[in-house]
Length: 129
Image (cartoon, rainbow, N blue to C red; front, side, top):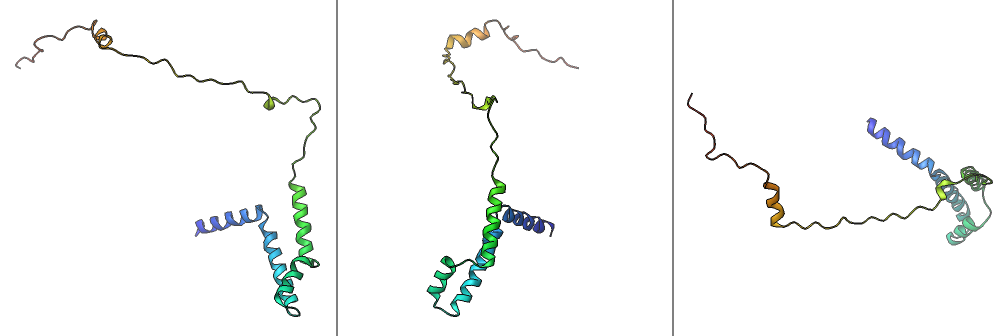
């Protein structure tokens, strides 16, 4: 149950954060306007009047709210009079090269064993206890 509440709350917050509530309210207003216009005119004329005619009170409210949201979400641009912007400096070119290829020969493998002592022959045995 808690998991469902968390999922619902997360989706609701995403819904509100993207401003989709204004789209839902606008669709409701258009539906209401279309039903009012379709009582006195054919459906095609009702659709035309709804989308291009005068705005209803709900449509005006939605337009004003969306306008306020857009102006509130604009990022203010700071003045750049005498500031040093280090993150706009050119980046030096980085060149990565592969290491030189190493060629191993049979003589190289024998050179590693040259300094090692030979194992005792025959191998040591445990004495009788």
